[in-house]
Length: 125
Image (cartoon, rainbow, N blue to C red; front, top):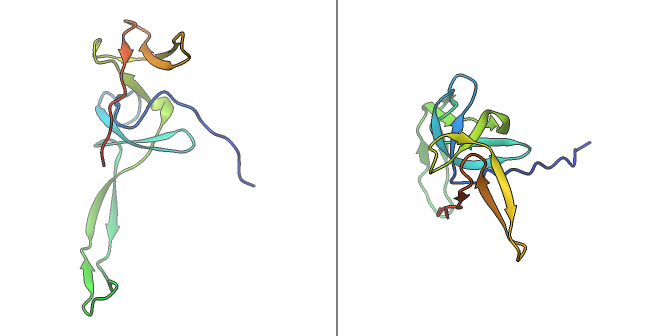
């Protein structure tokens, strides 16, 4: 039976995070994507290697097959959210996040150390 567990996090795609524990402790990277429940993929961190054979596949409307190269691929694996912390731009340190609700009802993220607002960067694909 599938769980209805949903995690809410103040870490978003495009944020700079620091790795707190594990083989990559102390490294920093940007959040590539969030994986439910409670996992995050960070660029350049927690790299695993996958061995892949070369494969042929036929494209629609084409008479010749295309070949996907084989070899050893390096893939960023998901990390648990408990192992990462958001880096404040002003403090330049991993910090906890506070949520501040304005008078008009909008929420914003704040650094718990220096109380500066942490803006969300728009990520284009």
